[in-house]
Image (cartoon, rainbow, N blue to C red):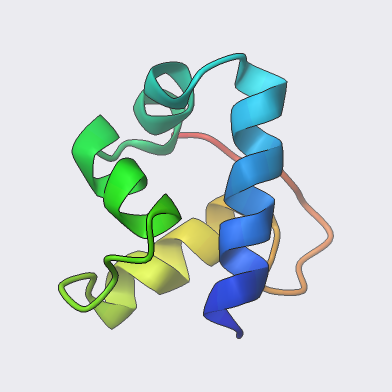
Length: 69
């Protein structure tokens, strides 16, 4: 799983949801965390968070996309 692939999927998800705040809520993360990821501040993002985001955006190779909690 590439972080850059997940970030691109997140950008598409934001477009789908209409705003970063709506996307963050749908993903079950804070808007600040999403903002940090999009701005390249990823050193404090846990591997588990990347796995969750990959699963929820379908960027982990799964056929299901845009799963939201």
